[in-house]
Image (cartoon, rainbow, N blue to C red; front, top):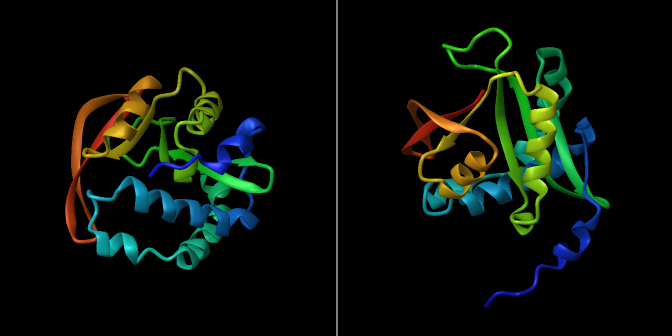
Length: 180
């Protein structure tokens, strides 16, 4: 039975800001919850159940410390003290990337905030940071229709490049999207 999401009332004032190392634990919590919800039925359930926010927090703390030195930036969306989502942008890792091309490495929201405009605000932040003339790319699991629709709404289109990635023992097709 559907219940009203109590967070929906708290989303009136969403702030987007640069992530800090102190955000690592909250980012990891959102990352794990988002994966478990978004990839249910796509990624093996045992893998999703085994995701550990504490382990992810350690990695996030390191990534947030070293990221700026490597040109990797992360922003968070928050409402009051609660972290709602995050996005990470860095140099494109694709073999065919041109100098200056950028890649969205991740964009995830707490599932309770889906449909409230938070991802839109994070995406607008990334696009503004990169600049309208910078080519942006990202990779999305082909079966993640919700994400693919979101990216299309923001001017990204599949460019025909695909790859397979092993995620939890499943060989999943990923599709590259670009925004030029």
